[in-house]
Amino acid sequence: MAEYKKYHCMECEHIYDEAKGDPDSGIAPGTRWEDIPENWECPICGAPKSFFKELLF
View 1: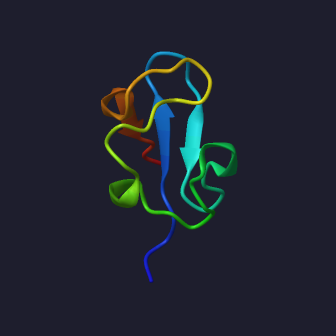
View 2 (view 1 turned 90 degrees about the horizontal axis):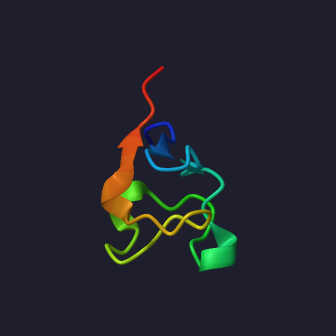
């Protein structure tokens, strides 16, 4: 399986880590970005999913 990726919010710089998920929002650890509902919002600032970009290392 491919490595987990990370995505950052361009509004507040919050990092969504696929390995950790977002349990407070009901997103289980290991949830891939493409499997997160389109209506999910940044848990810090409320920005829409479309405001996140993949972190490239």
